[in-house]
Length: 397
Image (cartoon, rainbow, N blue to C red):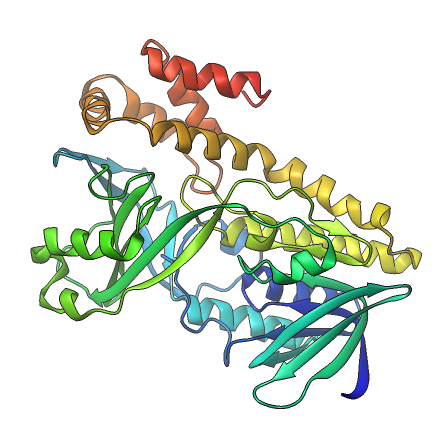
């Protein structure tokens, strides 16, 4: 074991939330070191890459990674009925995730954060006065690092959260996706049905010269995606059969504890994921800012105990807990609908004023307002009245 290296803050994980936290902390004058196990940030990321259009202005991000904007979508029922939705203006952007993450890494490095890729953190121990980590780069021997504070941004890998005494995601959907050459005239499409993606939905998203086809499900994602591609051979094209299917779990629901002495978690590691869609970029960036603000305040006080760090948990829960819970319970309850009941909803959408509600209340990253408005409109149906009442009993309406 080589001699110990010391930093003010160590960030573990080089996804958007970890990179954003590192940039904000370094900008605040701290000595920050980030470890990312992949050889390059943003490489081989399984992500649809759709982010709300206002994310760029809100977080001061450049639009260079944007491949195309999204202003309309097709919703496809279990039996092939289509509801087309066109928003008054583009509401989201499809990004190149490798370039998106690389831009965040460049910002962190420009602020003075030290980024080490191809490096994995094997252990984390909270001791009086410091956090100690065992780090290994490639095939080299282990190295000790220590810091006043550690930020865990490792996604769904919960090993370090367990070691640090933090909670971790316990409910997951399975995600699968392929990238194929784009077909002419492609429109973002969402597909529903128990035979397509039980428990969630599937998608086809144009992404520049490529298109991304994938799904979230409670079933077996790889097999279901192969079936989905086979059923849409005309859209997917001849390359679909040989396309590399990549899969990963996607966290769902709240994490019990995201702070402890000298440690906090952020992003998917903290369950900060849109439970309606599985997207985590916008919530991860927002909560990374809250984490950085809390840590900077701890350094000003030179106090890093559990009570000091808990300010972060209070703030992020105030910001996104309602969104996470409303989306989680609404998605779970709606996943119990039969295909016939879903088909009924598509018929209603064409005749019953649902589209105007979507146009008036929809926000790409903030879904609770739309969900509650739709439940109010659909509460004449017994099932949706039950969903609405259940959410109301949780104090979230």
